Image 1: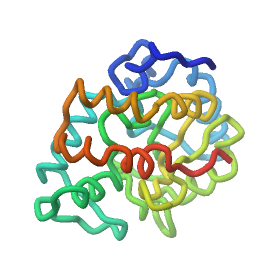
Image 2 (image 1 turned 90 degrees about the vertical axis):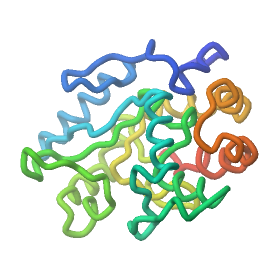
Image 3 (image 1 turned 60 degrees about the vertical axis):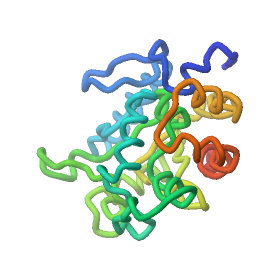
Image 4 (image 1 turned 30 degrees about the horizontal axis):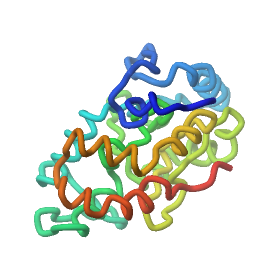
Length: 229
């Protein structure tokens, strides 16, 4: 897939031209639909009902989440899943705490429509609200079977988990699926300059600190992913 400069709006979440709406209302990349449906069907044959918690997120939606976390209005967690008092942190330490689980607006992979946060609806009650916590996908958690299944089956349909394990940037997210044929070229196209240009045009919370540390944040939280295997 060829990606040119005109796709900057797609890369940074300011366009929906590449998306299609699923029956459940979620938006995903139209070129990913077939692979996603096949993955769901394969899981169903093994007794699981894979559903989406989150798919495409726009720049504005990510900016709203980012603002709320910076202001202490949404919880921020550390690696031990303990809530952090974000109001006690400043500067880069504050950004690092938030970026552990929440992407910088303009740099979220969810902007591309290639990313899905998923759970197994067959493993919980109908009214269960997934929290997207590691404990749900490990040991006795309700989605342990799904986690194990994805480990061997996801790649057969073109998907991988970019945050399969923590490697100094984003925390491990066993629920996060990425469609490699589209996502890998998008990541290559999302350069530091593209991200910087977006943020200069569309300021976000902690703007001055973000721009001052953008090169480091880009290395640590944007391109620092687990290999597509």
